[in-house]
Length: 514
Image 1 (cartoon, rainbow, N blue to C red):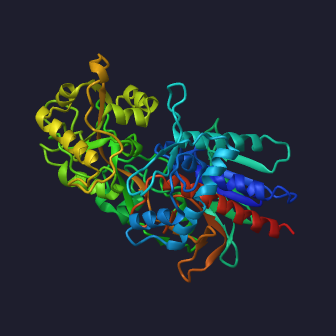
Image 2 (image 1 turned 120 degrees about the vertical axis):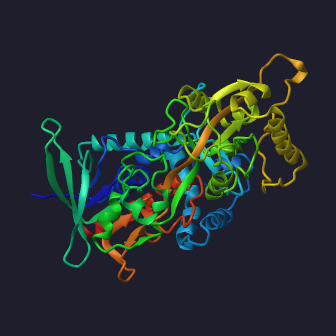
Image 3 (image 1 turned 90 degrees about the vertical axis):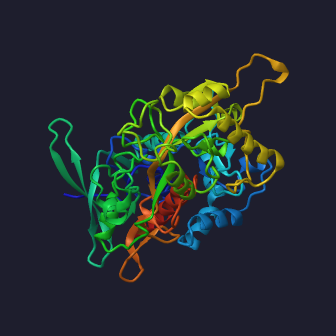
């Protein structure tokens, strides 16, 4: 016999958790309304927990406290420009308009200290919020957010009112249809922990929220990537192996339209670990590393791009200028190994950039073998195996444009920090370090997904009408980011549209209960 609840949420990343929390809040006074969240992994969090640069927001208390005069319109224009004309303006407008409340919700309701701001590539103002180091240790922003929301949901699941249940290890395999083309619930599988036997279940509901994420983690069996972006098959990825686009097939089987499926974001800076260069899963080099002053160099020690350009532009430049045997960055001192990526650059931070970024996270990167620290320009040139005079001129040219307030040859006009370390004041013995790593373009985010509207309703391919009882939020959706997503907009869309899906689900469930 099928179980029964009012709202089923499929996926336990930030979008799904935001939807669940908002749905429960909205139905707090509606007697008997229940919510179930189904997550296929053993724990919640998804790729949201990997996010490292932050969450965007305008007119936030953090911006206001720093005297930053940002605006909703500026945010909208930056996002539309990044999307190269493919973004849905209504969806973008809601994302920007609701960003203030989204960040405030995390700060106020969950006591998250989103007190550090960075200006990432493609942004006209510093608006990407992250957490400061705490006692010298990093506080990863994505992990901090999903952990806080996850604890809250665990507390709700433990309450005796039985209004919320969290089911992990539950893979949804089908959306149950109604006679009139809507959604009546889900069918899902679990694996018995003792016998490992697959068990079949079904759960009826008034509404289903899809928050299953994208398909950037398909790995060696790239169903969607092979179909829509075959030129990217074989690239490493920053996604977890769970990001396999499950919700896309579920929705399409019910007649939902898929949009922008060929638009896959390749992030320019996935770390190449010296001890494991062939690993297909890369640890993301946070965009804030460049946002706080890090520079990109090719294998000859020369800059080749505006580090604060959009991700697609930086990736294109890397492919153009960092792919030849002599221009490709690498760890090994001998000839390039077959296991090393075909395109790679050096990411270098001066002491000032490192201080601005935070030494907690840098220390973590060092312990992971992703970045190294050297003292002085001579040591940096030796580590990168580049000509010291070339390296010096590269960094001096960067700082010369910064000092003049000029636009450099790569179009860069914002220089967060100096690239060349200055001698210690007073000629002291204090060592000013450089921090460096090797980075390579890596599949990071899929802009395509189910077409939806600003009420989080999934739209039918046949006529563009909403599919009754089906909502969606997060990376499973398409149409918001267009051809390129701005850094910091992923966590934001999960909160904005996750909460919107929760509100709409609550309204539908409440009306169905009377």
